[in-house]
Image 1 (cartoon, rainbow, N blue to C red):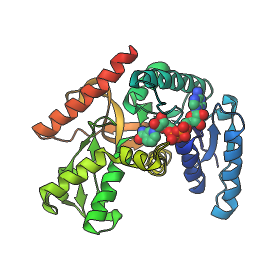
Image 2 (image 1 turned 90 degrees about the horizontal axis):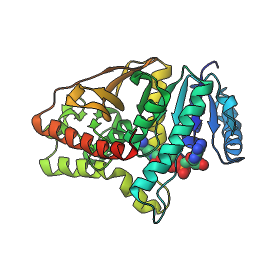
Image 3 (image 1 turned 90 degrees about the vertical axis):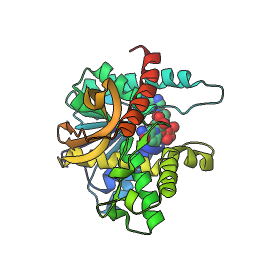
Image 4 (image 1 turned 30 degrees about the vertical axis):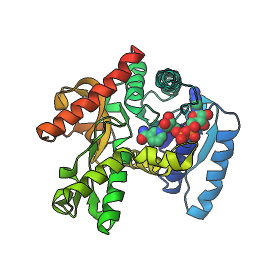
Length: 308
Ligand SMILES: NC(=O)c1ccc[n+]([C@@H]2O[C@H](COP(=O)([O-])OP(=O)(O)OC[C@H]3O[C@@H](n4cnc5c(N)ncnc54)[C@H](O)[C@@H]3O)[C@@H](O)[C@H]2O)c1
């Protein structure tokens, strides 16, 4: 195996992503965390699943960035969750420092890597990774839209009793309450759901999608979702490593597209070996455009706190 993916942060999302990448034999995987022993233990455990899975991927857990050298793709999942008494801005500033350090450390050893950011608050953390790395926008982007769209696809498939393989969905905007599910572009076998479901059911699916992360947190009590987030991150890595030219909703740096400039926001993007090859500037209705604008404003509020 000659391709190499580093996953920074060996927590729930990071370790599950490492497992998915290794199981699919997509690349050799390095799992790195600041907690001593934990990435080594999880890495070894995933490695020992390889004979059963029939995968020759090598998996290494480490605390040393030297082991990450020469990575093709680096996925940043490091961060802390909000603790009691912590304000949203405290969390923002803490994860800012974490993502800054992870970006600097990985790039020292993998200057040619593509960076995929997963840590929250996602859109602001993408901005941090771009600023710190100085990399072109094509090589720094974030995962959120694939997850939000997967949630919407799951809800549509359940509602209509059809195969998930028939369902496509598009959720754009920031990764938060203001995300913008687009029913007009969400289809079953090519037919928009607006023609298949009454308006109140479409509305309910959009609401449940926007609340998708919170719904899971309310069940789990501690921690947040990681099976669908890791699957979504793996899809993006797959598109990059296989140079698929795959159109996926990704958190990309916009310079005028959709009337938004200088911000990371979720938009349809074509992913390949060089990262973001193209942003698909689909034509939106005025209300859709306004919703995207509102979502971008919410992202800007967070980014402004960081004074990047
Ligand atoms: N973008 C999305 O759609 C999406 C979805 C799910 C989770 N997330 C975010 O992904 C992040 C990870 O979630 P999780 O559930 O895996 O959390 P987790 O707490 O299980 O794991 C986070 C890991 O990061 C590690 N870490 C902290 N600081 C570090 C540093 N400086 N260097 C290396 N590692 C460090 C921690 O030790 C921990 O193991 C969170 O910020 C979460 O909000 C984003």
